[in-house]
Image (cartoon, rainbow, N blue to C red; front, side, top):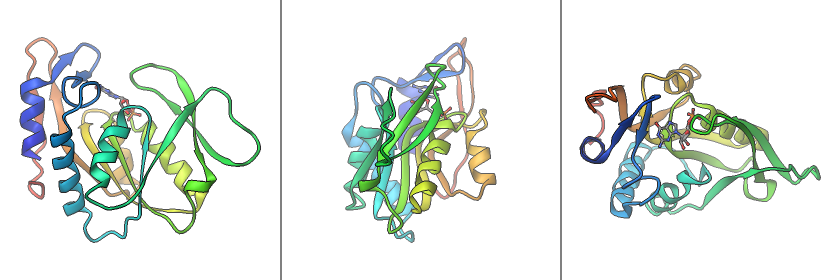
Length: 197
Ligand code: 5GP
């Protein structure tokens, strides 16, 4: 999506360690008009899918998912990061390894908010190694819900997450795919995606 690529090229900062900082518009200060444009594009791309719920993960997925959900007219559920899992059977849980924080944590979703009747679109800000999305897919499977697809704002195409998911047959629409980035020059190369706006 050209609008997002242009914004990343203008305001994104390439850090050492393959980290792209986009905190001036995406995951700290948030440009909600941009989020709305992302939501409109996902709604266009997934127009044929019977999505009735959006699933994301705290914290940085929540803002994007909520604004995007307005273009789908469906509720958003976010997986909560939890220190202590409540073992009374009322929650689905999965373990996720954080790319940015390098640690493993549990995420939980209440059984009240996800079930076999749900057709789910996962939305998140970044796709790197895919751990976050794979954890959410585990939860969708445990709930007996149907995964309709994954909408990502920024995919780092040089990491394995996108490849893994597409090889599993998951429909992934990343609105910007960074195929290469260089911390020294700040240069960012995007993958061509002619089907996007
Ligand atoms: P994954 O689980 O796919 O390895 O990583 C996804 C999560 O890690 C995202 O939810 C995002 O919060 C964080 N993340 C991964 N790579 C980056 C990055 O380059 N920049 C930022 N800001 N967050 C990232």
